[in-house]
Image (cartoon, rainbow, N blue to C red; front, side, top):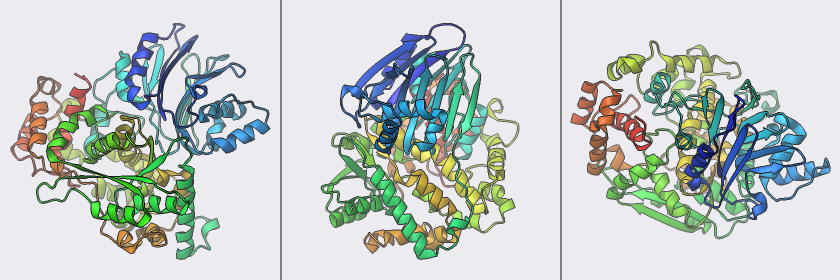
Length: 594
């Protein structure tokens, strides 16, 4: 797990090494254990290393293979690297390190861009062919590891975070109206390849991009599971599906134990993280370190779920760590969490993850986390409504249940210069849902949530907040084989039992019933949700700043209305409207964007 950066030129010039150094230094938190630079011809690569596999300097990056005449940088973890190493050795390749990075380079030499089909894990990489000048960029199937891009005349820059690209300079930081429309429609989610900045894009998940020396490029989309009922599963009953899901999750959890350092678990006390702890216990893990966070109550709302996390920790005998955060600490922690965001994110639990990661990183370098289960196994409350409509009505039903605002609503709050002339967010959903391979309206919704919304909200959130403290988070519910299995699972089994039915059935095999049958919990941060005093002060400060006035994104009357009643105005999905507006402005100011 690391941070990568670099530049490739298409105009015959040499890369700007000073810019690459600045980008690399901005990634220091993602890789506190090492720093490296490499340059040859039109390409330069930078890297910050977090030592997880092969702790020696043999695993340092950028890594070059003189025999193969390639060089590369890599962020993530290839969980099956040992099996691939054995296969590649059998094909005649020799290794000088014990790292998964070297396995990636050898795999590329052997199989070219098709090597990604053999990789089990989370990854973003850039490989330079020294002989041809070709550059290959790749991202894992579910987009767990980020890869941001900034194109300018004659060059391409890339980095593991958007702020790193900004550190390199020369980025168009004007706002992208289409991305802004998505941000305000989808609770701050912006779908790849866009970001809220017009000059920054992100490589989509499950994509390999081949860039030729003259700048021409082609994308290879190498994975997309089918959300249909398949013949090979036709004989499975409910108990068979339960067992299949439990076995696949057990494999996913086992894979994510691959490391040369201890691996802990972020334990909320909910079904998903508790299942991870239970399966690790089944695998023989002893003295497993688990970590929970809670917040003081605000507005009559409880801010912790320690009862359940304590129950799981006692049941499985973990080495449990509990962090209680006072409300006044939330406001002071906001700015640090926002500085860690590669893109603006409104979810309250960014602060929770950032504070928790700070503490966890003092104990371990790697944790497993339960993100993704709700999207993969239909755990959210809006899914039954999606299942009730005909397939052809899926886009309209999705907009009714998921969108924060309609296009007409946005016309009342955005100034005309920032409002597209049509409903671009609705069009995106219609086009995505029109693609073949999703059998029912619910299948279409789950495909969109798992491959778009999930990637650019909870997955990105966890990566940004953990990596800001040099902590690697692994997400077994996004194991691609588990996702493929869940995509084929009959919708009624996922919707059963109030949602995630098949997963709850699996949980009853290994967990106390009280954990499985509890009401669904969320990660509450009441001080943000209810605009507690210090948070509101920070919001007012940002929205009254000269930069906000000069930017003029939102209608002034709309902002005044929000500020006059901070806790009253909600989006259709219940999000605090003032927080959505203010977070965007605070993020822009934090990152020096004018």
